[in-house]
Image (cartoon, rainbow, N blue to C red; front, side, top):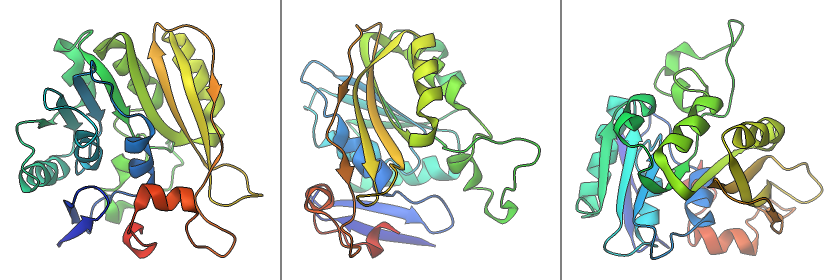
Length: 249
């Protein structure tokens, strides 16, 4: 089953989502808003684009010469992404590729100015309890088809020197993320902690790292999603606009 959701504060983008697959959530919205392309950054990629929500939003922040590529390994998800691109008349600006990221980058060495990624957050092992009834959801949430190290290495290969890698991930994996970025000669430029509410531990992080960049991290102001009563904070409303909590389930 497919439903169309209208993202009211993004110039009336229409997003088709398959209810049996991974739906976009606040992570993707926050990521797409975290780093906005500069005029000179004309080649952009989204690793694991799912239904293309990130390319669709980023297209609104970039100029007419910018080309955005969304790479998605799952055929069903990539078909929906292509529908979304056509639905919003962005097929001249956004291209969707149904391919494994590791294969896609083979002819994309030193090619992109920016790579966005909302990756699978959870590691897997032989004891992992995966929901076999939702096989289309597993690769979006769990590192079954690609892991964090492979994602960061792939970004290293595909980015130009000085290119930006922009990612959202779990705060609890920050030490591993920093290690892998340094291993691939990325330097974190901006880092922001995302909290559900004040007086709680941060759940997510947003970061942008520069390929072959210089040392020096800018720790940004903490971002709080909800007030104590469960409503969105003012800073969250600026990002979501008229979307409600129910819209983002």
